[in-house]
Image (tube, rainbow, N blue to C red; front, side, top):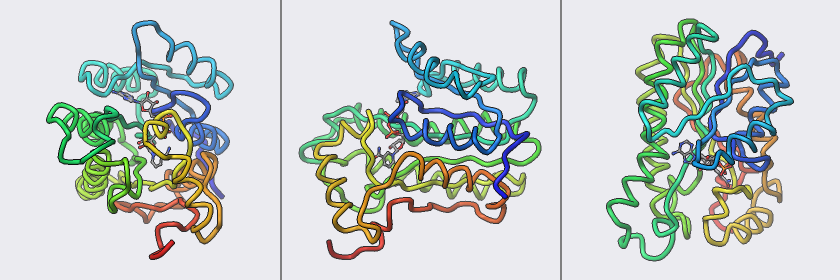
Length: 259
Ligand SMILES: NC(=O)c1ccc[n+]([C@@H]2O[C@H](COP(=O)([O-])OP(=O)(O)OC[C@H]3O[C@@H](n4cnc5c(N)ncnc54)[C@H](O)[C@@H]3O)[C@@H](O)[C@H]2O)c1
């Protein structure tokens, strides 16, 4: 049976009730995990208030600001985990960002600044969070990230984020190799397109979802809840033999050669 009771799980990437991380947090909570939640701090404190209100029913025992571009905030987050929980079992990395200019138009037009920012936030952050989590995963653990098909195929209006996802997927494999001897598993879920704050920056997201509904074997798109269920499985002992993998949760779309 899927049981995460007694497990300490840190969830990044909740912005609102459309966030994939919100779907994951709900399923981890339902499976009995003790939750910690991070949010992206902004000057007006909007995310803090909104995310705090949203996650309150899941009774998180940690609620922390963490901008992954700020090494001090990352360290403070894991210091707080150590102080409060002693050890960490599950880390959910569910965040990404690219400037709109890095997603649209000719790919070769992307500026160095936009390119490196997208890679830094969307791919390097898995490395830095895993590095900080490693000493706290003293009883083994599970690290999970979220990727998309645009990291292995060319998808219109995904551009630089595709490069970031390709890097992210290789991060999964290198981290799995490094951390495996410590019984820390590292995996990714490649989710089908879902309407969220981040995906609204990808031009034509509505058409992409419609296309999936027409072509995918299940003839529909997927939900945050379905991604959350797969995440809970991958973070549980039921998946104890799985590491370094990218699991497609996309209603089967990835297998199709012609739409
Ligand atoms: N929505 C989709 O169709 C889809 C499909 C496959 C994969 N994904 C991936 O799922 C993950 C979550 O995205 P989502 O679609 O739920 O959108 P979302 O907008 O709800 O989540 C993105 C999160 O990234 C956070 N973030 C951005 N910059 C950050 C920073 N510097 N530090 C810390 N956090 C930061 C935002 O605060 C937000 O919570 C992303 O990695 C995304 O690429 C999304």
